[in-house]
Image (tube, rainbow, N blue to C red; front, side, top):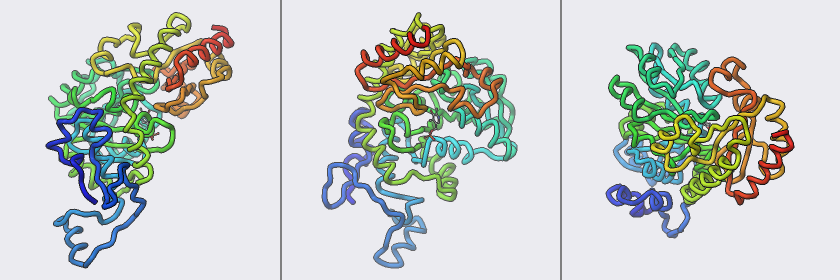
Length: 401
Ligand SMILES: *Cc1c(COP(=O)(O)O)cnc(C)c1O
């Protein structure tokens, strides 16, 4: 394997994101392949015993086992780190593997974690159910309330964990404020940036310490594989995350990493075009449905903040109609948009969070975080926006709107 200029940070850090997304991290075999090679191998062989001993001792570069290193995966990690503006990145088996590892690698019994109450259902399960089982205290707060972050801090607070925009309420966190507050108290901020990807929002520019991803969403972007990633400083990744990851094994499979490579090549194009389509659909729907939750529309309570933090509004927004029956009626009337709980896909997909992604929570918890019975969440795809608008138009009409 030959490293290309794509692995030389003195060169790649000067590249702009679109170049990094295509060329960052590339190694080539002796065949000089254009597309990244897919190394479907779990292990490696060695010319002699001294070589393997030196590698295990950390005295020689080289691969030893795919839970520890894999060339296809390593190329992807370098590429994501560059796009994120992070010193280092490690990929994971899924977004939830990434969130779990990002929290468990640094939290211990007796620590305290403050988390946004509006969050992806499984992220809330980590905070509400998993962490407390290991003696880690947690507090959930209204993430749009800056004072609530400050009031929740205890002497043992170690981590702030949030999404922005949040799934599916589209709550926006004031990242500059929250990250500065955290850093003043020696607290690590872990940001789940799944709704944006580095093509639309780079939380480290606002002071975030750790950025974690479901690469299943916009990064793959074509609904094919599960994958995740964690970005941070070299010190965090190598000294805090890696001992956890290497010994517990939530690794990204090489095949999935390769698929995400192909996704990243078109990430920026897709993320911006899907954002444009989502804005057009949102503008069409505003006034027609009772309540819109759309970071690209001035009616969003934190529209100005969203404009500041995000390069574009992203493909996902939510809206609220009159209860579960009307929400289900809209879904059932769709002809083009699929009923699906995935997001970030090139296809337009719509779901009813209260009966799917957030069905595992009590109705009170859902109401408290704003996941109402009449809420629908849409991922706007790359179809012609006029076709998406016409489908939404007829589905709303069919449901009496
Ligand atoms: C989908 C999602 C996850 C989980 O990612 P998987 O790849 O499905 O495990 C975590 N956080 C957010 C905000 C998500 O949208």
